[in-house]
Length: 195
Image 1: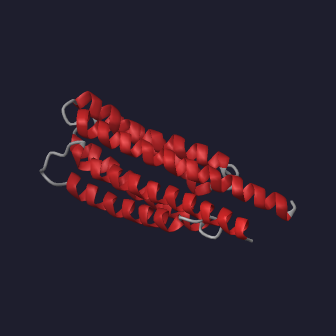
Image 2: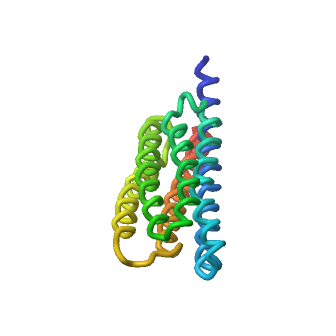
């Protein structure tokens, strides 16, 4: 592959990442709003939203992995797809038990998916900007997961509100990454125009 072709592939993947991060931020914001506005007062809707969150993560990682060179080259994302699909099924099962079980499952998923996101960001660090935010997001997700598991073992009765902050923080990290890539692209175009 020539340098021009490599530059084109890299630019195309960076454009994709920017769109991907914006879409992920939008979904997390929409999920947060739905959970806060409707999920808190309706158990069936709360349950559906809690299953949807990891299922969406699986779909998003699947599409991103395919668009970023294939799942064979993106093993952390391929593994994240499996982990998130298993989690969606586990949440569905845990909903039949108690919200403490659901929170425990969510916590385990937040740890695993956070570490896998961290791995993906570190792998992308040399090629793409804004990965520092994804590294922070992955690390914070793992920490939040540990806190969820601890909360799940207490006598408290958790609700969907317990994980809404997690979605909100995730939205912020994705939005920061998308904006960072957008500004970087503007600066790059400006420097070419002045060159």
